[in-house]
Image (cartoon, rainbow, N blue to C red; front, top):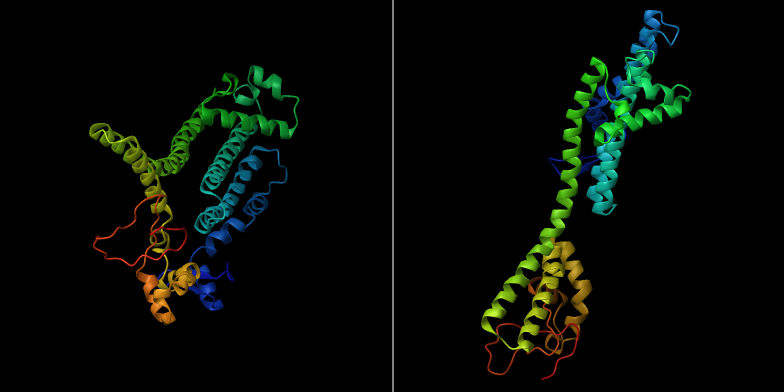
Length: 323
């Protein structure tokens, strides 16, 4: 709108100037919002001299209310914002988004199907007035009629509708053919988003499973002692955990200033307590943190021994070692 700040993709900054905000909105979606906000139905009905709502002309003029659907486009931005800011877990967000889209598709088609029956005065040529359907719906109120229309729509969407509600006229056949085409795209989108979500999690665990399988194959061929096999399995599990939680892997997406603040908060006291670094300036310790890395070791594992070529300075951040 005319007062909502926006992000300038070119300069990567937030624009808060009122004139810039107003001009951007005026040259983008303002005219679309303006058109879908105009009460076109009463204007057209008044221009045609329609005063009774139950006439055929009034029913078709009422279709102009569908222009209000254009007001729904901000819902895409809402879900994009929720996803970008991680307000909801990915699974919850995916389900909420898919069910929202599903509801609107089914609801709109239910309105179309009910309009077909209403435009045909609910006679036998419409799904609403045929045989068993007429017996069910004739004595119901408007809300019950909508629920049956919604049931018809969702039944067609899923392919499990009662045969009583299937098409019996050319117009119904044309509408349902269009609906089937929309359903193919909608169902592919819903299944695709859920599949991507599940496969993404499965890929992360799949790499670890492949490593375990390769290790088991290697151990079966080499016939190593049980104690050594157990140590290798434990080390593989520790390595997998370390890769997921390593500071460099988590902080690589952030600028150096934030990375330095995080590292200083977690490890600066550890460096200050090290007697080898006593008297060093904070600037030197910050530089040391920027090139240091955290390593995890299993219990009762030899880290280094006398005679090894030492190329690293090891500082114990947590735990106990014996010399």
